[in-house]
Image (cartoon, rainbow, N blue to C red):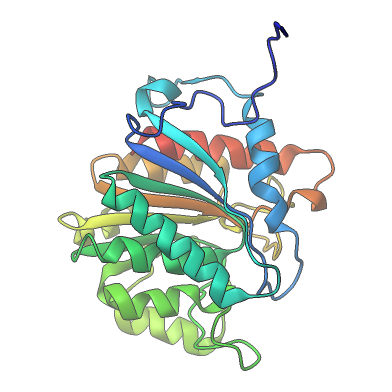
Length: 278
């Protein structure tokens, strides 16, 4: 009989029992519609490995990972080359999580994985709103004639929750028409109090890691200079801890573009800190 101990490939500090967990971490290794550099499909696995380099304790929030009570369900397996089947697979699994009285924490993958999450969560929370961290507007109707694109995810999500229920943080790149959409619907948040319009809503938080500056997050599919520093991002999380967060995801790490591993380490700590406010 082997005695071990053996290495754990799940996220550090997770509750191994799905039934008693409050939050379900779901790996979403899909990058079938990326418009620039692919590779975010490799992020969930690399993030899990890197999580073991973290401390379980967050001094910012004075909490331990086990206090969060999350279960790492592992990665979904997607049919290669079929975007619509992949999105449906995400949608059905997220629906199952909410049927079981839990909430999802997705790890992408590209940003389009957020759309089926929103579709699923909206079935259970009619007053859903989205807090969107990103360098890019993601408000296109389509990209190169394809409506299902990571550059269109928030535009499609706005048709589900209403543009008035979306706040966007860190945006610094997009088409003129997208900036006009943000201005028309007042989606761009510049200060913490801009989020107060969503105070009585159920909140889904989606973090595209390219919201962070390229100096600390070069390992992403569409890097964009001029972004947030890590502590700025966590400051927004701290403000959100008093909101009713009913789901979240962190997407768009492409780990192989940063061979130092630093981008993956940053992504892992972003996930830890966001878990602390859920």
